[in-house]
Image 1 (cartoon, rainbow, N blue to C red):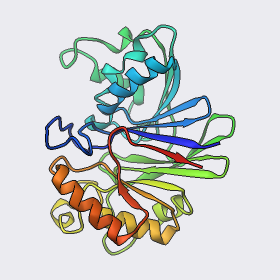
Image 2: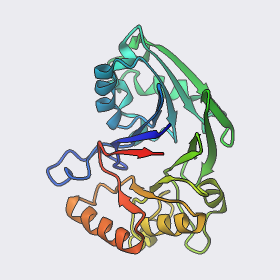
Image 3: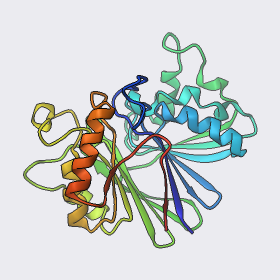
Image 4: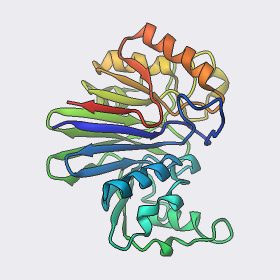
Length: 274
C-alpha cells in the first residue's frame, strides 16, 4: 500500500500571496500523508486552510495532526481549518517539544485568545484531542503505521518525523540548522534508506553564513545528507519568502543538476511512495 504525500504549504517564515510566488506556492508548512483510510497531517501553517476544504469535499472527518514546532508559520492556519468546527469530526493534535512548557493545547488556545483572535479554541466543536510526547518517542497512530521522531536544531526546539508503512519510509525534516563542518549524525541515521526526505532547504550554501543561528539549512546540505544516507528522493522544502518563482526555478535546476533525486516541492504537488 502506497503512502500518498500531498504538499499544501511549502513556504517558510511567512505566507507569500503574490504573483511572483505562484509556481512553487506561497502557503506555509502543511503536508498531508494518506495511508489507506488514515490521514496524517504535518504542521498547520496557512496551507491547512485549503487542506481543510479538501477534507470536507472528501467527507473526511478524522485525522492526526503532528507538529514539528509551534512557530507562527507552522500553526497560524489552524484557526481557519474549517473541519475542526464540525461537531461530527475528530482530530488528534500532537507535539513533541512542549512537554515542559505547558503543552500544545495551551499554545493553540493562546493563539486564538483575545486580543489576537476573535474566535476562541472552544468554538471548535469537533472532538479535539491534544497530546504531548517526548521527542524520540515512537508513535503508532493506526495499525501498520509507525512514526519515529527525532530532535532538530532550531530555536525553541523542533521535531523530525519518519513515517513507515509496508516497507516504505517518508521523512519530514524541517526546521533545522546544520553544522557546515559535520553532517548531523541524528539526521543521517534518521533518514537512512528513506524513499523520500522532505528537508529544510530555506537557504543556499552561499546565503547560509549570513543566516547562522536562524535555525535553517540549505538544499546543498539536503543533497549531501540524502546521498550519505542512501535516501532515494529529496523534496526541497520551507522555501525562503525572498526566493520568488524565478529564484526557485534556478535553485531547482541547480539541485537537479547536482543530484537527480532532488526536486522542489510545490503547493498541491502529489507523490505516491510505493
